[in-house]
Image 1 (spheres, helix red, strand yellow):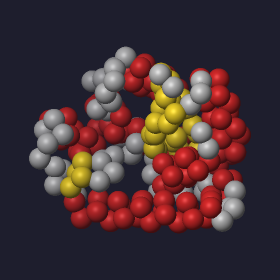
Image 2 (image 1 turned 90 degrees about the vertical axis):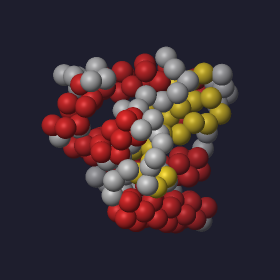
Image 3 (image 1 turned 90 degrees about the horizontal axis):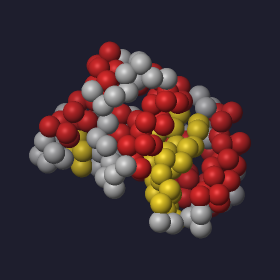
Image 4 (image 1 turned 135 degrees about the vertical axis):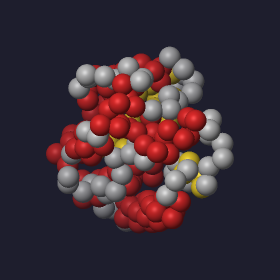
Length: 183
C-alpha cells in the first residue's frame, strides 16, 4: 500500500472536490494496513481528511478516505437523515455511522446502497439506483446518474482531471501533505 494508490483512488477527496473515496487493495496483513493508514492519517488529519479501514479479508483491504466536515455537512440535511434512518443510522454520531457501515460491508460481499451518500453522491441518484436496481441510468461514471446528467458529466471530468494532475505531481515528487487541500 503506497501513497501512489491513495492519490490514484482518492485525488478528488484530497483536493477537496469530493466527500469521500473508497478503494480496495492488496495487503500482506491487517497490521501492515493499519500502520499504513496510521501514517496517512498523521499526514492527512490536520487537513481535515481521514482514512479508515472498512474491511480486511483474504489479503485485501477496503479503505475509506473522507473529509469529515464535508461528510457531516452532507449528512445534515433532513432528506439524507431520513433516508439513512431506514438503514438503521438514526441518532448515531459520525464514528458510530462509520462503524455500522464497516459492519455492513464485512457482512456481505456486495456494497450496501447507502454507501453512495458516504461518497458524496446526490441522494436522488442513490435513491433511484436502489429503485431501478442499478439499471436505466442516464449516465454511468463515478456513480450512476439518474437526474442531473449535465452537471454529473462536468463533475466526472473534474474528478478525472484532478486525478491525472495529482498523479503527475506525486510522480514529480510533490509530497502528500502538499497535495492535500486543507478544509
